[in-house]
Picture 1: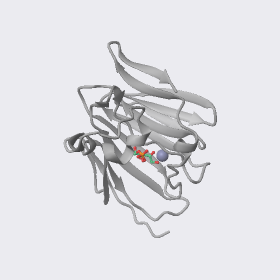
Picture 2: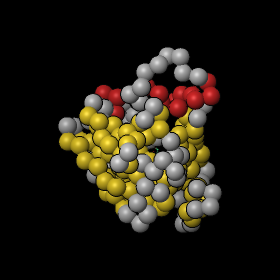
Picture 3: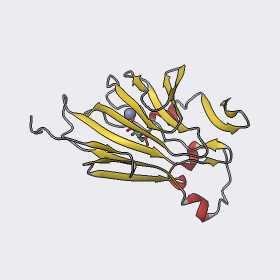
Picture 4: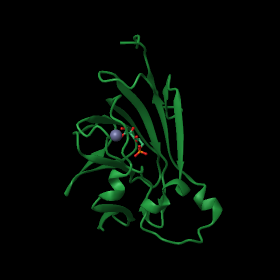
Length: 184
Ligand code: F6R
Ligand code: ZN
């Protein structure tokens, strides 16, 4: 046990986790293959568009410790498909996670083998993602960023291959009604 008590704070003005020590930005070019639209001649400015940012508070990656982060998904879509996270499973499949909505309106897609579920992510709503369920978050408000807090075991690891080998059964598109699912 090397970790001493500490405090973080959700900074709703800056869309970050205060006290975080790890920041990442994911652009369209980093995740284009995850979208349905295929065009090898996409212009550079589009590819540089930031889709989401993560600020994470790191702790030793030992059993018993907990990681926390804030994810901000910007409003937008790529050829109709809403901005979303890459999505992943946990390397330690049994590791669970909780997402707490802070601002905006999103969907959490969850898939365990062939079973698909989704939940709305809204301020104050906490979604429990059991071990073994791959997860991806989608910002379905075309006008506003989506902000949510995550907490999960520090020894979980990220398995991004999991959602390539077993893609989510549904994609989420912008629609006159708000959003619509498309089966792959
Ligand atoms: C951690 C977790 C979230 C995501 C974050 C970005 O286990 O589920 O903190 O890591 O929302 O999404 P990905 O990792 O899919 O790029
Ligand atoms: Zn996760």
